Picture (cartoon, rainbow, N blue to C red):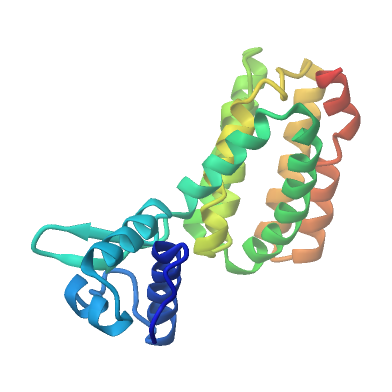
Amino acid sequence: MKLKRTNLYEQIAGEIRDYIIKNQIQPGERLPTERELAEMLGVSRTSVREGIRLLETLQFLEVKPKRGITVKKLELSSLVRQLTQRILLEKNRFVELIEARRILEQELVKLAAVRATEEDLTRLELAIELMAKQLAQGKSIKQADLCFHQALFSAAKNSVLEGFQTALADFFSAALLKAGSPEKNAETLREHQLIYQAVKDRQPDAAASAMRQHLNYAGYFQEQTD
């Protein structure tokens, strides 16, 4: 296939991407050399190099000396972090982030209730114990809260969903969730206990219901952002 000269490097990048998909080339596997790609596409090696550079920028390819051109493994956590940080800069989109989290975790906790191992259950239980200890000492429970939700992501046994743990960490670290009152923190602890028990009892619907109640803090959020 001969490519047109308009925006040639973008066309080349698209052709290389399609080649990877068509031939089911997996992350870490090598592509043809620049010379071979240039012959395949009927363009110069310089143009191919520009197309490859674009795909490198997009985190699609990786070029290393003596290794050649390889498909890069998707680092979802990095991409999600960039997206979340952008959203956190736009105050009017905080609510959208909360909505997305509510939808995501209600489904995720169902998977956790089915797939959680004994090790996962132990991690959840330890997070709750830490939260109770911090609450008794009058300390912030935010870190224990984060550990609990990260353990749920891990318990779901879905590598794509686990990539969102990074976004969750940024979400908790942001100023939009200020320290709650002792009463609010005690309520949060009870909600986590209900979620944990439902996961432990292998009850997906009950776990989702408990998570929905836990994340129903739209009013609280509004107070923090007014």
